[in-house]
Amino acid sequence: MSQYQVKAGPEAFLPPAAASMGVILPNPGECHIEGRIAPEEEGYEYAARKFLEAKVPTIFPGPLVLWNWNENATKKAKAIRALADALPARLIPMADYRPKYPKIDAEAEINPNHPNLTIWHNKIDVCIFVGVHCHQANLALKIIRGGTDCFTMAMCAQAGHEDACLSFRDATVEKIEKLMAAVNKLKKEGVKSQAVPFKQIKMTSSGRVA
Amino acid sequence: MNKDKITLCEDLADIMPPEYHELVETATYGKEGRGWKDIGSSKELIEQHSLCAGCPESIAFRYILASLPAPENTVFVGSTGCTSLVFPHVAVQNIHSLFGNQNAIASGLKRTLKRRFPDVEKDVVVLAGDGATVDIGLDMTMQSWFRQEKFTTICFDNELYANTGGQESGLMQKGFVAKMAPAGKNFDKVRLPEIAREAGCHYVAMLTVSKPNRVEKAIRNAIMVAREIGPTYIQLYTPCILEIGKQSMEGLDEMKDAESIGGRFVMKEYISDQAQELLDTIAAEEKAKKKAAKEKKTVSA
Image 1 (cartoon, each protein chain N blue to C red):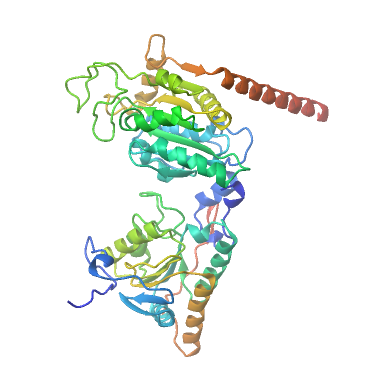
Image 2: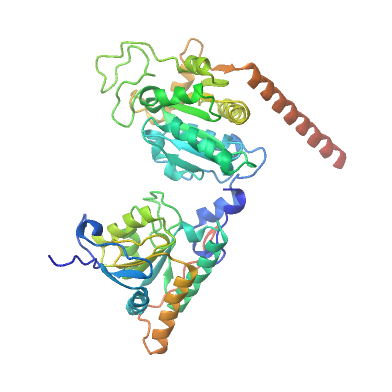
């Protein structure tokens, strides 16, 4: 039997869990690319290339990096902002995991219970999850693979995600910076970002300001 | 968790939707004298609820959240039932336990928090429906009281299993016919407040949620007594308007009827001598504080 590949969807209304199809998690120092275990360095370049090829590259930061609950979260937030600026990529927060429909502003936020709405609305073709708790990331990644054609990546602080098309593990500030370095390297080599011009959404307590 | 941790990372704050900015800027965390009067004017600790329109349980939830003496240092333990639908929306740490297990989970949690944070008062509050408290979880509920575990148990009593279609529960009144209990209930409503008192609870109250100031006082009393002395129990009548054939606007009237003279939810309160002593001390301290503040105001004027 050939190995199952975790490709961008839409796979089916209920895509199979990649783990049940034989996809295993990477060991430390490795990543998985579409279900294939590869050295982490290869993953950085692959992810950077995917991001630069994308029309709407997007970073989905989760509660673990949005809330200032420890010093490391602040550092990760800084690194994520730098990565978004380097690409450039949209930053759309997954601020918490409440089922927020029908109130959700699909353009400005994403929710694990219906992430496809945000993907469809913004026509996102490549995304990365960072700072999202694993159980919610698994749910969202599977829904995205089921109903959209978005290529998903996960910068997981634990053991990685089989249901992402590409997954890193043991995420640290340094690993986010390595991904940014891979982007900058490709850019220096002449690879140009294909991102559609956009303006990062800005919010305050009184609403959207940009 | 403490209030300082409820802030946004500066580098990503500008992408956060307005409600989170509002939560950080105007929530009542850490505010002295917070209470039910903040509802509607301050950012509440519950953004939305996923219960039915007009559900008295949603009212109870808001009053409880507004009444917590220290929400930033409170952990809720929930159980299966309508209450569990609200927990994802609540800006207070919470754990969902297995059906009926809530008081066992809370016992371990309270002991662990005491060891992990010896210098911080961490409140554990169980919020469960009558099925979880009285039927499926009665063993765990009572054992925690026997052991004198220092946390508060709040039972949302809607007198049946509501979100599974209306089955009979131990707290259902005698003779009541529900959708899934067509023969009517054959025995009396379990007298859990009395059982709680005999099982060792130091503060017990049974009331409806029609009067917010009463609810606030009961919740605060229960939490303060649980902190210092031992287990406390509150039973709140939160009728399921759908299962008793009422309209969305009729929940409040139903509660008022139930607490009128001769009704089955006339407010009952039991306070042990030890708890009464503590509550008197707290009341005296608050009175002195208010008096001092008033005098200070007069002098400065």
